[in-house]
Image 1 (cartoon, rainbow, N blue to C red):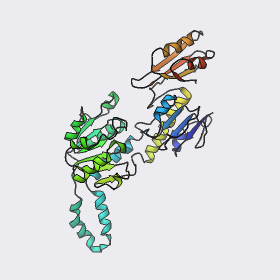
Image 2: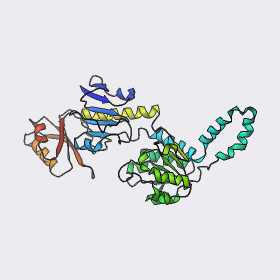
Image 3: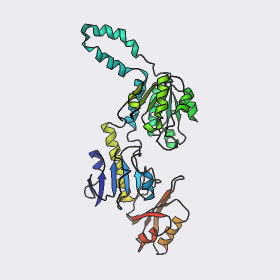
Image 4: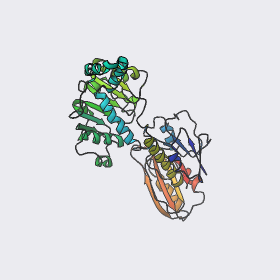
Length: 388
């Protein structure tokens, strides 16, 4: 039996992907093989020796100590694209409410609700205070063209917007999903100079933290509208508030309010609603459970943020799974240990992405060599080894 610890309420449709004959699932497992989490912060959590993986039912992993997991051979999964439809729809809503003061108008109508027969004429007289521009013909800059950004870019073209997309890490697969009308911006300055609206869809890492700041805002068009449904830390709050007060930025819509932005002028602060749909929560739970299950049972890695992807079909043979440093000669030493015992390697995959500290190797053998786990574990550079 394997055990799974849930750190948040995970949709039952996802938990049902874990066979009850193989898994125990609860929020009080003491030394689980897997953790399923949504937003719970794990940075101060001690991980048991059995822990193989953490699957985040969502895209961002800021709540997980990824570096510590990498050092200890714990695979961290996320669920890219599972909530993309929900965030895309909220982004389209954000474009509209950033343009026309729908929220202000609704609140104003409530203040005159007791005026009886005068409500209708008062509405006609007062509606001019809430006007705003149409989206058609305006420039939209999408920074980050992953599963979410690409959907938003495509949808905006159908609204008649002139869409610029920027992503220095754009994959071939993602490019195939982009509408041909999306203009490929080779640098962010191109978006700053041309776009009336800018929407952010990148992770918060060292190079993106606070990248919307006084310097970059100065390059933007006057009256630009900024939408941030990605991470609050992408924006320098003080610089943005100054730009809102001066009118340089006409409106800021964020899904990550804090003590400063929640009350800032011309800011619409939403309570992290991006993936808050039942469909999205179900999709994320299903994807996270499947990722954890496939790794625990088969050693396959897909959609990991700290380990390279490696997937190999099972053929029933003993399978050796090795997480090791991405350095020379480790693989050669592993295969030598197997071959010296007269054991045949039936199938093998080795993956080591440039920029990742660790590599990963899966080896199917026709039989299990004696003492193979201890022997492989003793190789310099090996972090974790197991048989599945």
